[in-house]
Amino acid sequence: MTPLLSRVAVAAVLLPLVIGVVYLGGWWLLGLGLAGGLVALHELYAMAREQRPLVLAGYLGLVLALVGLELGGIPWMLGGMLTTLVFSFVVFGLSDVRPSATASFGVTLLGVVWVGAGIGFLLLVRDIPEHGFWAVVAVLFTVFAADTAAFFVGRSLGRHKLAPAISPGKTWEGLVGGVAAAMITAFVVLYNDRDEFLDVPEMLLLGAVVALVSVLGDLFESAVKRDLQVKDSGRLLGGHGGMLDRLDALLWAGPAAYYVILAVGGA
Image (cartoon, rainbow, N blue to C red; front, side, top):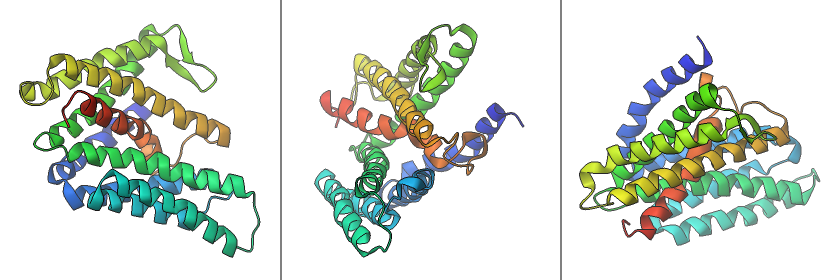
């Protein structure tokens, strides 16, 4: 099976499951977020093993951040993230090994903020009264559409490299195609709620911002992997690579979508 067919097959299996859990929301969605987040965090810490991440501290910080979000919103999510520093210092102090404190603390906190905030803001989008389900569906499909369009447009028309030092395959032409596809997708998914949630210009804005930020999320993970000299974060999802490979764009798109919706008054 080619990598592209493998990616399509994995998406065909996982997408209905994810959408079903998004529909249920609440603690069901939190459970999915925790499961995916812990796997992604594990992959990051495995890739960065030479920096000696304080794995237990990171796991505890992520769980407290997302559970805190579910119980008390953004302030408690931030509180959960900050406990990562406390747990990191305690674990570091009790350990017999003496790696670089800066590297250990840094990569541990990076994982919790990167993964925890990304998933947390997707949960916040789902919590938008009346429109949260379709807002999350719009983000999911918009990211997928942008990634797919960027791949095909870039492969057929791409001439100008977007970030050659980080991801040589990405092109400016692919980016333009991805943004256009994302705007159309956001419009289609949210059109029925145009009089109650976002109007048409706001839908298009949401699609454009999510597409642009998702590319940054993809490039961010690529930069981390290149620095750590690994190709994929894992092989859990076949042609998709690891969990972090599949979530990289969403981890940036979630916060961007939330703040776009908040800015235009939809939240």
